[in-house]
Length: 214
Image 1 (cartoon, rainbow, N blue to C red):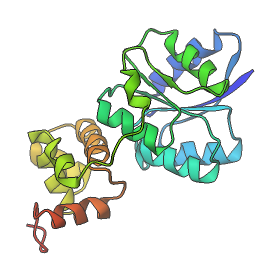
Image 2 (cartoon, rainbow, N blue to C red; image 1 turned 90 degrees about the vertical axis):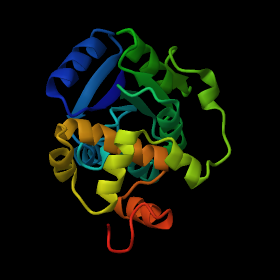
Image 3 (cartoon, one colour; image 1 turned 60 degrees about the vertical axis):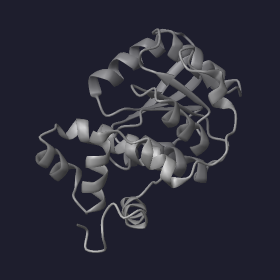
């Protein structure tokens, strides 16, 4: 039996995944978590065979969860199951230590296939993603990373660098908190930073903000 820890911040989505996986016959969801911190605690309490995680979650998010888990257990098998399919984001997840990446647009049985592959010691990419993403690449300069931000992402990046919270960004830009959280995940991955402090330092280096945060 393949023991799975499922991390996603939507209870209804987790319930659907659990039912799908347990119908497979050889997969058991042994724990669930709604945020990165809870998922990490569950992993430490009872390490699963495979950790399946979304990226856009409270508590540090899925990318930070991957890094924490891999620091704790280098052989951990982590599968990202996300609505995001940006090649840059997929690369970041794989470089952080994930062994597989599947988008939520995949066929329902794709999740079972991916979990079985990771459990067997293989790496896995969803069929909708280019296989070349599994190949190593040269580090991308910060200026090029900044250029990958969309206009909306750049607005949010600047506000975050100035010290605004996600909730404040949502209020200023008249967006939903979930939309800002999704953008924040993408921004950090595009820029190759993990913490808010690193994001602010990058903004200062490239004069997106000044020392006073303006």
